[in-house]
Length: 205
Image 1 (cartoon, rainbow, N blue to C red):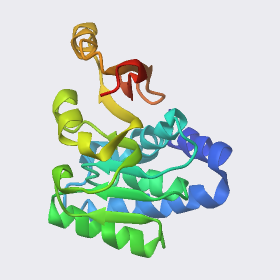
Image 2 (tube, rainbow, N blue to C red; image 1 turned 30 degrees about the vertical axis):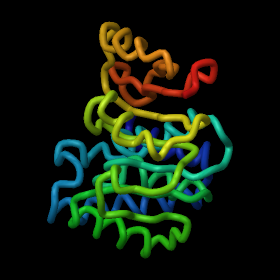
Image 3 (cartoon, one colour; image 1 turned 135 degrees about the vertical axis):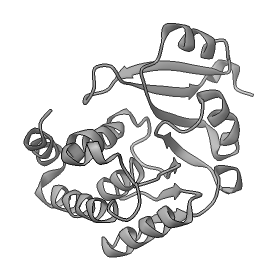
Image 4 (cartoon, rainbow, N blue to C red; image 1 turned 45 degrees about the vertical axis):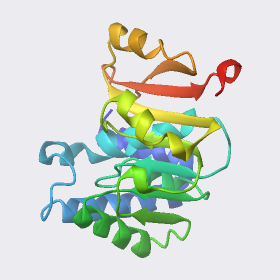
């Protein structure tokens, strides 16, 4: 997917206004990336496809149409800021690194995202429960599920971009009979996957 194709993808699905807002945020990321390493310098030239579309595609895997969203380890804003720009429901972004959290706070204010909140902490310190939880390549899946379990309800869907997921890893995860795991392919990289995790309602704790 080229950068022009990525922009067109946004316009088709979210309209010109949202696409312009995404573009404004990506501009802020480019500027800040000169001062702190928010994204890989090698990926800046492909920021629309590599980071914006890669994040926005998660919205098409949401189970509940509304509800609050928790993004763990938001870093430079992906996927949390994309979710906040493209949705109107509450979004909480958790980022323990103070400098990155300060950048996210500034972006939230500049883009007037009143439904978005940045918390400078680890997920273990977060209170509340969320309809959707995302995390882009943060820790192992098992550690992540354990660390953020207190933020989930039996209806929560976890949407976890993980890169390539080997069959052995998926089989290992599926030994947890309290959850249902399935894999969706990424739109931006055929070698990458999105792990979807739901509570097994037949075995809910």
